[in-house]
Amino acid sequence: METQPSALTATTTKTMERDPVKTVILASMIGTAIEFFDFYAYGTAAATYFPKVFFPEVTPTIAMILSLLTFGVAFVARPLGSLIFGHFGDKLGRKRTLVVSLLIMGISTVLIGVLPGFATLGMASIALLCLCRFIQGIGLGGEWSGAVLVATENAPKNKRALFGAFPELGAPIGFFLCNGLYYMLESNLTASQMQAFGWRIPFLASAVLVIIGLWIRHRLSETPLFRLAQKENTVAKAPLAKVFKENWRQVLQGTLTMSVSYTFFFLLSPWSLSYATTELGFANKEWLLMLMGSIVAFAAMILYSSLMADKFGRKKVLLLGTVLIAAFAMIFPFFLNGSHNVAGGLFFLVVGFLAMGVVYGPVAALLPELFPTSTRYSGAGIAYNASVIVGAAFAPTLASWLVDQWGIHAVGFYLAVMALVAFLALLTTKETKEMDYTK
Image (tube, rainbow, N blue to C red; front, side, top):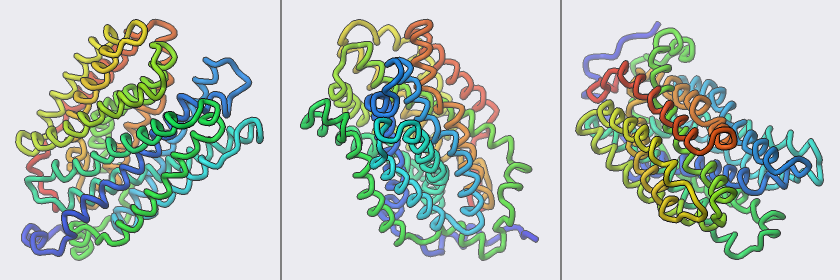
């Protein structure tokens, strides 16, 4: 039988021992940095090298589509991972699940780096690639929500959005590290060397980040709010059943709100790389360099929008962000035209990442705040990872198909529709800035 939190909860949480802010920042940030490093490594390889490595016997267009479909396999697995890790994260604690999710994520990524291609194993190579990608998705399913809870459950009440920005900053950090590594490799290796073995190096290099991440998280304490829930015997015995019974509306709101971020993100990164190098006349490393520059603007906007969310509320900032994305969606196709249009490419990347940063920062505070402590890991994780399927699983593939059928403007309409869906979901969502996070 679960009991209600005591009247002394607020006072108790203030006096409970917490990890140093530096440890909280590093522990929450390192996992999402590795997550996005791994995903960028796969996204870049899928858009550039996998068509020839794993699909050499079909036409280039079909090979590209099939390669990008394998990219979506992990997104399908992520909700399953969120169910598994959410259950144990709400029942056993945030720290343990974060360590296991990082380990699963790292092992599967390294295995992709040593996987033989189609020339060696035939169809078995494709099956193993999808299996590794699926297992990677399971691990990723528990990463974001756990990292965000480590940050926000250690945060002062008036700085939850700012603390939630720390794991969100893992996205641009992982992006910058991975793309920087690819840029260095492509600057020093020939195209044939990159095709033969160079693409494998980022997957293998992620092992270094995983070891660092495990060391940091081993030093991490359980969050004060979960320890308080254990002390007051309010830990849910069946958190998944509880979240679907009592919080299904919040899961739906969180999923639809977050989905536009993922659609936008994967149009800006793996899809744009593929489109720019095949249709716009850019060299691969040239577009990577432009991506690396624009990601700095993304990181800055994550911090700024999170500060604004602490000041004005999550809902107002997120509504503004969805409007900006919809407006950008109608404009950017006019800039992605012509051969080697550098100014147009920079507009698409820099302005696009700025607009995305407006929504990507505050959502790390909003999603956990939609749920009570007893189901927060499960609820936030399910909403976040379901949004991956809705928003990103097939975004690069769908965008490539839309361009082939109706041209680049169709991609803009696709993004605008996703922004509208998020806007409507936010209208039905209550402001969470002042909610009691201890309950």
